[in-house]
Image 1 (tube, rainbow, N blue to C red):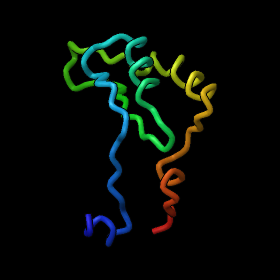
Image 2 (cartoon, rainbow, N blue to C red):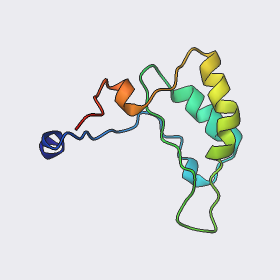
Image 3 (cartoon, helix red, strand yellow):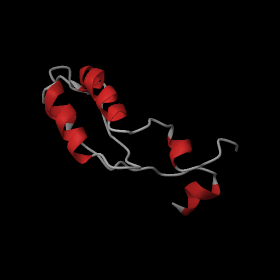
Length: 89
C-alpha cells in the first residue's frame, strides 16, 4: 500500500458483494445490493465472466437497482469523489 501511495494511487475495496457471478437472477442481485448498501458504500458488480457458460445478471439488475437506490437517497459518485482524491498526478 505504501508503494501505491508513493505513486499517487490508492487501493479501493468494496463493501457490498452480492456474489452476482453465481448466476443469480437480476432480482436477487437487486435485493442483495439493497439489503447491504449503506452510506459511503462501494458496490461490486460484474458485467461478464471469463467462463462462457456462465451468465451474470447484474447489467439487467441495474435497470431497477439504480432508481431504487436513488429513491432511497443514495447518490452515485466516482471513486475519486467518494474518497475526495485528486485526479492530478
